[in-house]
Each structure stands twice: as C-alpha cells, then as structure tokens.
Image (cartoon, rainbow, N blue to C red; front, side, top):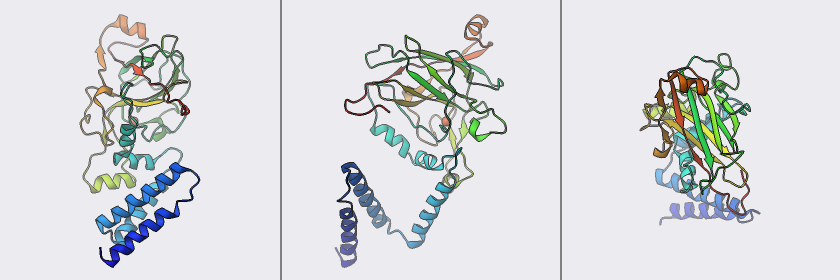
Length: 294
Ligand SMILES: [Fe+2]
C-alpha cells in the first residue's frame, strides 16, 4: 500500500469512527456501511472531480424534480433495481411475493365499497378483479384493507393528468369481507413508460434503456397482526414482462386477465361483455413478534 492509499484508508476509518457515538446501533451500522461502500466505489472507479460534480448535479436534479405529484427519488431507486432488491431481501417465502411500491402512490385512495368501480371515466376495456386475503394457514383475513391503484387505458395515473382525469381515478381502498374476499371493477391497465422528462429519463437515455413497464395493478394488503404486503398484479399478455424498466416482475405475480364474453357473468359483476377477469389471492404472513405492524 503506497502512502496515498494509506491516507485514503485512514480517511475511511476516521469517517467510520466518527459515527461511533451514534445513539442508535442500527443508525451507526447503516452509516458505517454507507461510508465503507461509497469510499470503496470512489477508489474502484478512481472517480474524477468532474464525475463527482456530475453525480452531485444529478442527485440535486432528482431531488428538485420531486413535488407533491412526482417522486423522482423513488423512480431513481426503481430503475437502479434498488427498490426490487429491498423487496428481495425482505421476502417472505410463505406469503405472496412483494414488489416495488413505485412512484405513484402519492394520494390516499378513496374509500370504496366491495364491487365498486375504481374507473371514473368508462372508456377502457371493462375488467373485474376478485380475490381473497388469507393468512399463512389459508384462513381468511376478515376486514383486511386492500388498497389498489393503476394507470388508465392510455398508461397515465390520475396524478400525472390532473386536467384530464378526475382525482382518485384508478384508485380504491377496499375492506375485505368476513371471508377475506375483495372485488372491484376497473379497466384493463396499459403498459406505460415511466416519466422520461426528468433526470431519471436522462439516465435511461444515456444508457439506451427503454422506459416501459408491463401493464399492472398495484396492491397493498394490510391487517393487524400481519406484515403489510406491497405488490402488483401483472397482466399476463402484456408486453415488457421480460424487460420491466424497474425490474419488478415476479412469475407468481403474473395473472391471467381472462377474456369473458358472457352477458350473464358480465351482469353479475356489473360490467358489460366482453370483459376481462383477474382473480388474485393474497397470502399474508404474520408480523414478527416484537416488530410493529406497518
Ligand atoms: Fe405503476
């Protein structure tokens, strides 16, 4: 080790040691690891001053692109696969697979009754989603909350088009019945590009990556005593299932949105034929003893 390397190594150790007094052990552990990995990155790349300045400018732009209806920081985490990795390291083999939250869960979903439509526009392909929330033993979780949100048939969320879509379009907060069942009406969501008009879009462009996500419906299922599950239902015949821009697809979350051309079934669900039907059961796992529920 030459003297420059010795000085760099001493610097890393000095910064790590500076956190020794952190009151919270986990905070100390996280800060120390961040410093060790970030310093190692600088060494490995022999990062130039100009590259460091570009990195600072990029992160600044990511922060400045955020507002009440746009979350560029989550988007950056998503396209780098960090959001998916967090899900992977927190996976629950006995439960339904989780996946990324995404950047569009920005407003509270309107409370709706079972069977209601979350589509307030009525121009897309009618779709019915049904399912059941259970615990790890398969027993129903009565009264579980099921929060869903999705883009419209053109690939836009309500928060992206406040002049076009009514607030709450594509969103609903449902309460499962005594048997853990939930159902709602909607339209088939479209694949969509993540926003490319900001710094994350520039990153994708610079690396010649496409910005598309396969069609999906977001879902958060929660109930006291269980771990909150954040996941998606992916539309089985959607393009981009094999190249999701945010790396969120898991085979178990790809759901058949069956085409049904039967007026009787349509009437039973309160839609017109032909319509699509997705059935998706959610298996929650118990909260870890000692950990608070989310
Ligand atoms: Fe989404």
